[in-house]
Image 1 (cartoon, one colour):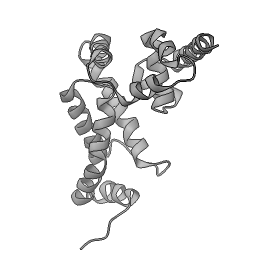
Image 2 (cartoon, rainbow, N blue to C red):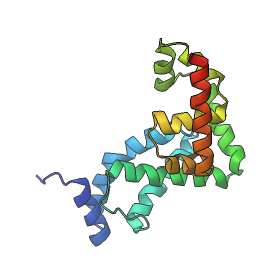
Image 3 (tube, rainbow, N blue to C red):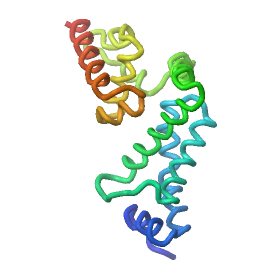
Length: 180
């Protein structure tokens, strides 16, 4: 029976030796997690599956280099989220992204984040969030709920980092006013 290798050891084996077993182990560890995260951003299962495959192909082919800074999950999320943005832009650009976001907003199934926010009893936070524009809510979701940096949120949303900062500031101001 073999020892369980660390993520760093697996990535080094993939990069240096094109070790197929190491790659398969890395895929088993992270593909389901990445798929679930991307499904929170895109309702089209086939697009998400393609993006997961493209993400791991980039790792296998050496197009994505892990610098051993931070955790592997975060590194894979950055690659996957960028590839998702690229995929959405490729098919009708912003139109396809808007459709995916609209499907997410109008689906019957309530997300975990929506349930948590609806249950908050400090002021009318849920009501205040609903009254925000979709653009401001998207920035809050990316930066607050998903914990992305301004740069990562900009890539994911397809807007400049300065716009992310401005929208986040406007969203916080509107929430403060609504809850005061």
